[in-house]
Amino acid sequence: KASKKKYYPAKKSKDGSWSASASISDFGTSGTYKVLVYVKGANGKYRKLKESVKIQVADITGGETKVKKKSASTSYFYVSDIEYKGVVSSVEVTVWPKANKKAKYTYKASKRWNGEYRALLDITNHRGLHGAYGYKVTVTAKNGIEKELLRGEFQLGDADAQETELYAI
Image 1 (cartoon, rainbow, N blue to C red):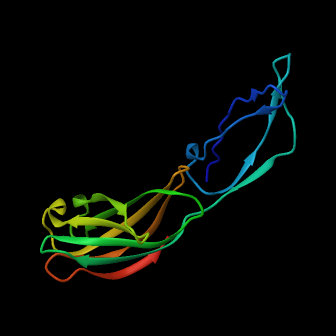
Image 2: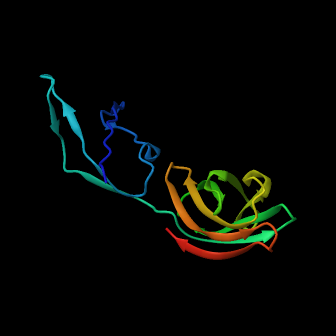
Image 3: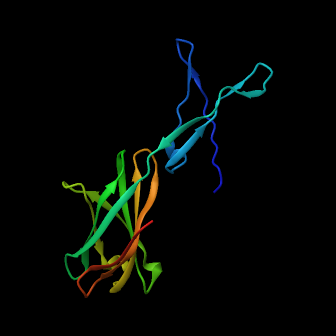
């Protein structure tokens, strides 16, 4: 995995202290971040000021799915039990027929009163193909962390919509 580095300028406050803000969305992943502080001297050279500081950013985990048929051409896709200490800003469900992966479509799921997310799938977005479908669920946190949380298969169309396989990423 390649290391991403980004430099943030610090600002001096009235009390003489310095501070800088870094946006986690610049990196997009959870885990441990190492922060190094450098000072630019009058001679234009940089030197490391202190030992590094480590900051832990929470991961997005959990998640369960279910699919319920609404009509001959539509089904509800539910995502529940997402575990995250921060604020989830969006849940997207990408769906494709196993017979034609080019008929892929991404749905935005909306949060419901009970905390689960729901997207309305429409078979017309997938060239009207019935049968086995694949899906992936991507969750984005307010701080910019994005994670492909779930992936699996289900039936869409003629037969009642039902989940056939599920696994966490």
